[in-house]
Image 1: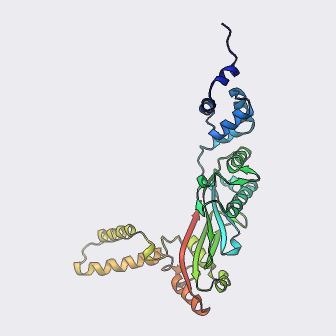
Image 2 (image 1 turned 135 degrees about the horizontal axis):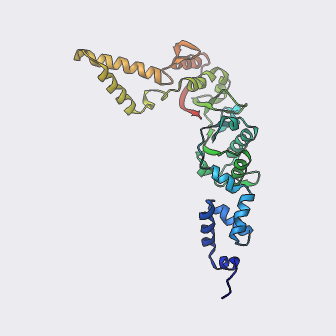
Length: 302
């Protein structure tokens, strides 16, 4: 009995069966498998070769490797009222400083900022419809991984937009003007945004404070109550031979100290330890006859 050629057997298989077979044998994604089969008349052997030629197999093998380095990338942060931040990781510090990687970080962050159809914050999974240079983000990323030779992961992004607040940002030890490994953003609301924007340079120290001192929250209300309960429990266990009528006073004193050290408004200002961040902000507000209140803060680290 004459054997049917391989291509004839493959034609009898459904499209989904072919995609599954190619996916099982290569580990490639469904979209890539579908495209590979379409480009090669449903010939699985040719599709495998096509995936190799495009660097997709090589790139996908790298996508399981651990990423411990990378950058926090900003776009348009000079505006202080409308910009975007993206956190992107790679495997080594060498690649994090690579021009191709940094260029991708800036291009991606710009594309996210300018796309009005995606959520204001999210992860890689929220960027399915994003295109870069007329390519899908998935295809663009696959080509970059193949070229650079390391796994690259888009961890998160966030758009900062406001008509009433200003955003103070800081990049620590910058790789270039828009990328670093540590960055912070502090949102300050005001009754006069236009006047507040003139105070950005003076208020920059608050964003520096977040990067340097890594506060747990803005004030006591923004710290998880469990953290305070745990701290109180630790204080109690460390207390020995203390009269019961003195314990509450000691606990309150140590908790207040903990809050001063771990809340942004309570911390001593890094440029002038004699005043707190809270008193500094009040002074700037008073001197400029303007209302300034910290409403959010974000710390980005790689």
